[in-house]
Amino acid sequence: MSNQLQIPLDNRLALCASFVREGTNLADVGTDHAYLPVKLAAEGKIRSAVACDVREGPLRNAEANILRFGVERLVRTVLSDGLDQVAPEDAMDVVMAGMGGELIAAIIQRTQWLYDADRRLILQPMTRAESLRLFLCRKGFAVREEKACVSGKKCYSVMLCQYDGKPWECGRTFEYFGRLEQDASPEAVTYQSVVLQKLKRKINGLQQSGRFPEMEYYNLIYQELKEAVRKISAAGQP
Ligand SMILES: C[S@@+](CC[C@H](N)C(=O)[O-])C[C@H]1O[C@@H](n2cnc3c(N)ncnc32)[C@H](O)[C@@H]1O
Picture 1 (spheres, rainbow, N blue to C red):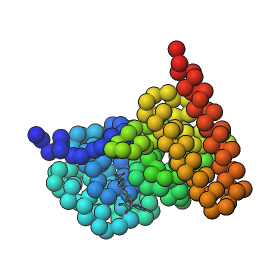
Picture 2 (spheres, helix red, strand yellow; picture 1 turned 120 degrees about the horizontal axis):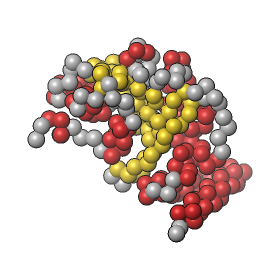
Picture 3 (tube, rainbow, N blue to C red; picture 1 turned 135 degrees about the horizontal axis):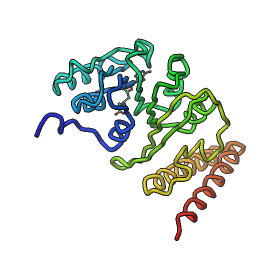
């Protein structure tokens, strides 16, 4: 088996990688092990990559993997909070995976050169995806594509975004389901049901701690999303 085949990309990172343009200059923010840029470089799919992390420890892992798979001419590490230490020309495609949605939004918010239609953002929030979608809509980033995948026992959504300078107020179902709001594929259906389960747990917690106005607020959202899921499933019936 060649080295290339041994680079461990799970379904989640493979889905992120599938959105990266061939021949691009890639920045992988919060890279940790750097599997994603290493795999794309080993396959000859990118021109260059910066593997960025805010901590030294993950960057040492990244450097070890870059050397192990022999892609040091194409991939280099950068110690950086978000994209603060990255040159704009090194980041035509930007992957931010495995971080919280609010952190991803904060990194985009302060990186002015990401407000550029030629760049591609590939975002996979671990938490608070709804906050990230709200931020993207309000700041004029279009979610061009979104796909769900199951990896291990978890379900993830990956968004492909580009700045188009047209802010819009997205509806509730878009906030929580994104482009998966009309999607009846098995992965999207799993994603929708995980979102509903998380909301239900939140509502139960609020009830137990006596926070009734908040509980009511989230209960209305839950009912709205449940109805949307019912319609998607009815539309998918023969
Ligand atoms: C859970 S790992 C995700 C690794 C990889 N991207 C993935 O999806 O498998 C999150 C990484 O993000 C890094 N990180 C957290 N905050 C960051 C920031 N503000 N800027 C850059 N990296 C950050 C952490 O140090 C950690 O290595």
